[in-house]
Structures are given as structure tokens and as C-alpha cells.
Image 1 (cartoon, rainbow, N blue to C red):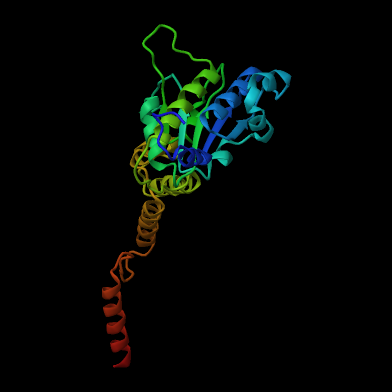
Image 2: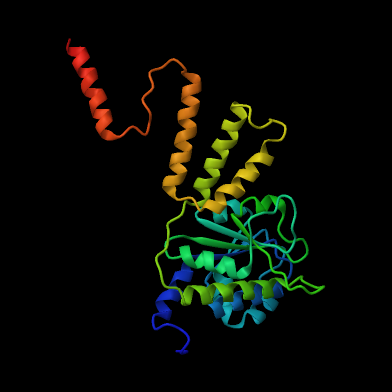
Length: 277
């Protein structure tokens, strides 16, 4: 074992079982093979292919070398949302910036963020196609975006090279980490919360029905930066449910949902006393 790795490296590497590499519409079989090889080199096992244009053919397996088993076990799907819904952290990769592309991280920052949560959370790292990258629609499903900039005139990395660079940094961060993780909400639960939020904001007239996604997209970026837990999501959804109920029942007796148990008991005791009179 290398001297610069901690003694419990094997245990740390098992944490990478919680990480998922997702390729969206990959075009070339060679990149499938080299991605599988990079994953094996860095200790990753879970590969998802979303609407691949490339075949898992002889070229892919020849270039995979030691990563052939990853290609054998790769899950092929046509739905990025379905393949990331159980993940608490979804990180996309792109070199392009734009108005809808926010929450940017350097590869090192992304590796550090993944390291801090991977022990108790499933994580997905999403890579776009060689020719078109990641669409804005797919980026909406990503909580953070990794952007690699070298300062040179040619910053477009080959897909498999991008995978190798990002996975190596994650490997190093996870292997050398000491400290406790924080459990985050799953992507599916976050999306349900955002759906509720969009409907609620329409109901109260905060956003316009002809362009409801613009503000919801902005709110997504804000909440993703917060790193919400399951409890956080439940509280936010509870606030919206309570607000909707109050709007529909403006004259009803108000007992706040967050009333402490002792106060609730006092209210119930008072109500029982009034009933006995």
C-alpha cells in the first residue's frame, strides 16, 4: 500500500459504491470503454448510460481492458431523472456557461463536496455527450455543476478524459478524508418539493403561468446550495401545505403545526374542560 494513503484505504474505497457515473447520450464506443477503465482504476463500479448512441461493441471492450465487468453491468436507460432519483447529490459536468447554468464548482470543490457526504448519501456524477454536452433540461436535474477550465484556447476535454480527471479527484478526496458525513434529501424528494413550490407560487400569483419554470429554476439553485436534509424538505413542504390551508380556511381556528407538545396538551386540556362544563 502506498505510504500517502491511510491504512483503512480499502474501507474508504468501499464508500465509492455509493457513487454513480452517468453518461448522457455518449456517441463513441471507445469512450465507453475508456470510461469503464477509468472507473475501475479509481474504484467506481456503477455505470448508467442514458440513451446511448454508442454500442457496447468490440472496440468498447478492447479499450475497457480491466473495466469489462463494468460494461457488462452497465444499466441502459432513457430517463436521467429515473437514474438519479435516489441520489442526494447530483453533479453535472460542462465547460459552457449561461444564464440557466449556475451553482458552479471546480473539480476540486466538487470532489470535496462529494467526499463530505458520500458515506451516507448516494451521489451521481453526470457527463454529457461528446458533441453536444449536457442540455439545459438535463442540467435542471443537477444540483451542482463542475466546470473545468485550463486557461488555454482549447478547453474541450475528451469525454473519457473528463471522467478520469473528475473520478481521480473524488477518489483522492474520499481516501484521505477524516470526518463525519451529513445525510441529505434524495433527488426525487427534492423534485417533489419543487413541484409543490411551483404550484403554490402559481396559486398565490408570485409567478406567471406562461413562464413558471424560470423562477422555480432559480429557487432550485438556491436550495441546492443549501444541501437540504429530509427534515428540511418536510418542513418546507409543511409550510406550503399550512399556507394553502390557511388561504382556503381564513376564518378557521388557528393551531400552528409547530406548536410544542406541552402547549398542545394545555389546549386539549382546556378544550376538554370546556366540554365538561
